[in-house]
Amino acid sequence: MEHLYDRIRDARERAGLSVNEAAERLGVSRVQIWRMENKTETISAERLFMIAALYNVDPFELFKGSKA
Image (cartoon, rainbow, N blue to C red; front, top):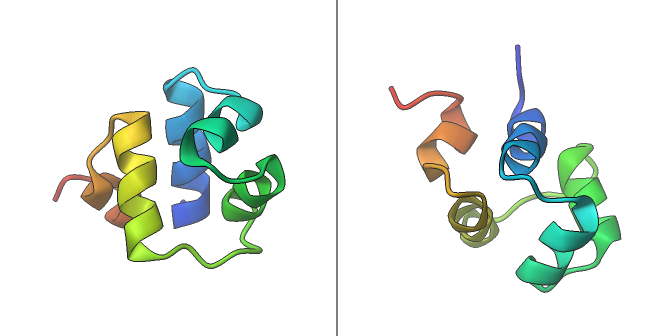
């Protein structure tokens, strides 16, 4: 079963962004990106929407794993 953290990493990779590029565009440190992708940081709904917009994916897809 794929978790939210895995889906976020996969979406970043599909968007063609490195950890450093994603961090810069989101205005966070690369350590925070690493933590978000490795289950060591809680992700707020606001941050999830920012990530979805940056990675050009539906936020629901990140949250649930599919578009229903």
